[in-house]
Amino acid sequence: MASLAKELSAAAGAAFEAMGLEARFGEVRRSDKPELADFQCNGAMAAAKAAGRNPREIAGEIAGALKAHALVLSAEVAGPGFINLRVSDAALSARAEAVRGDAMAGGEKAAAPERITLDFGGPNVAKPMHVGHLRSAVIGDTLQRLFRFLGDEVVSDTHLGDWGLQMGHLISELQDEQPGLIYFDAGFTGPYPAEPPVTMDDLARLYPQASNKAKADEARNERSQKAVAEMQAGRAGFRALLTHFINVSVASLKQDYAFLNVSFDLWKGESDVDGLIPEVIARFKAKGLAVESGGAWIVPLAREGEHIPVEKNGEITYKNAMPPILLVNSRGGTGYHTTDLATILDRVEHMGPAPDRIVYVVDQRQAQHFVQVFRAAAKLGLMPEDRLEHIGFGTVNGADGKPFKTREGGVLRLADLNSMALEEAFRKIDAAGKLPEDMSAEERADVAHKVAVAALRFSDLMNTRITNYVFDLDRFTSFEGKTGPYLLYAAVRVKSVLRKAAEAGHEPGAVAVTEDAERALVLQLDGFGAALLGAREKRMPHILCEHLYSLAQAFSAFYGALPIASDPDDAKRASRLALADAVRHQLETGLDLLGITVPERM
Ligand code: ARG
Image (cartoon, rainbow, N blue to C red; front, side, top):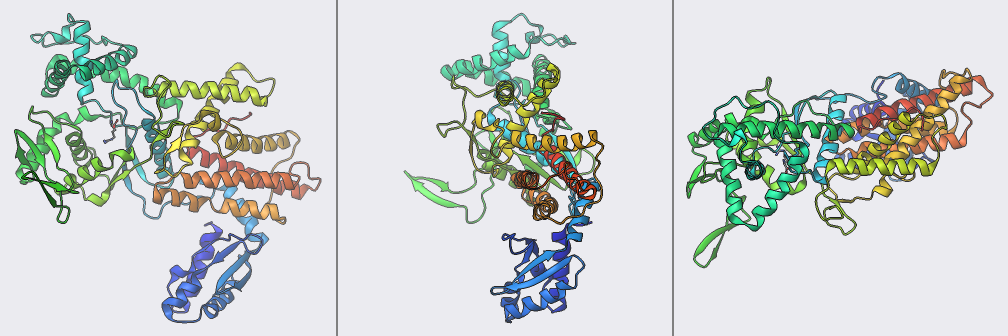
């Protein structure tokens, strides 16, 4: 059964069509004045304008047609041509039952599902993640869950950063510490030891050590540059080290992501497309798209109208033009643009059926990079520009309004963030004092973990993705306000109502809606499908967050207004328990799409 809003839209659309007007005018949505109507249709005004007719007259005819519809209790024209609709109790009851019994909890599949490669996470080997990587992981994973739920075929890839200067820093710094390692013997050709020569802690120490030295000392930086160029050119010992570094990093990354319920199908990285880079370069050259420039090769990307020549001291520069990409540097090395292009080639030509679309969930500050990569990919004929999509997001800021840093001033490691959130979750649980006395230490730890994840994920997802937000762990972990823990608490409360009723021998039964609080609850349940599709279409998880928050509030109002398990009337009690169960089902389904799991008790 489709949502009531959708069925009413279809009926209103047909009524407009019958009058020779466009069906789209029939869009029906939830009324913003619940005391006057359940739903409203505002299309008569626009239709009247298009047809040069009287809006109230059109609205009157549409309302007349809708009155005959099985779901409709009343249809009234108000003001200049608004149509206010009330649906029948029976329609609401049937809808609640449908939601309760539906695998999608009232959601609907997308009309045109796609095959999507989802590139998110993007951590760099050895370099600690910053909070921007947290956002990419959380938003990307939520989109992955949402897309799959709505019928898209998703292949997710974390696209590790493992090809840049940081690898040169690691290799040269390790060489300084342990010059005797076999990896540095240029004459040795393998096989190399299977045991990694470093741990994650070593990597976490070596990288900042080298990068700080390189910042202060150009000669030291040059050695890192040389090491990465040699690695990229295929020096066996350095490649063996690269593999070790990746494996050690990935093992630790997997733990950090698992904590947050984030998963990837593929753990590929920049280094995986090394073999395709010559091909990409050759294609750019063969098509005459690459230009030599001081020993390097660039691909100009500026378009007509973007060229604004500016003369300064006899030199002409182009203002506002899209800068070219550096395909190959003068050392023969390749960077971020080229590996991204080779990765598109890989995804389109070498990984089974080509995706309809590649979606990148990456910090908004990389917007220009993606415009450049997409233009270059389109020029090469790899994929049309409109099938490549950058889903950007704002920064996570500290109280000072600048991108969040640790107290020591450094970037925050994901592992540290996770443990901070876990600690705070334990503190909040203890302060609330709500956990049942008989709870084992293990179950308590599990609840704390779920609270921590709900806090981190929801506080990130509830914001419009593009805006920045302030990191405030105390607020995120609070059980009050628009937070993940509040939603968990709401869902646990529904579950506990149902469990206690079951213990007393009361089961959900047929729904018979009569009261206002029941009507409001079902109308809220009815909006789930539209929220899901809206979140997918705009790639905006906050739309789903809003829906779930409002649902929790509607349940709270229902719970406050009416007895549920304690109603002495068998039919009413069974009906309200079924309503509660529909809410539980939709809340759990929706929260799961946000990567948030509801504990049994809390
Ligand atoms: N590793 C990159 C960074 O830390 C993010 C990678 C995003 N994905 C991509 N295909 N470029 O900034």
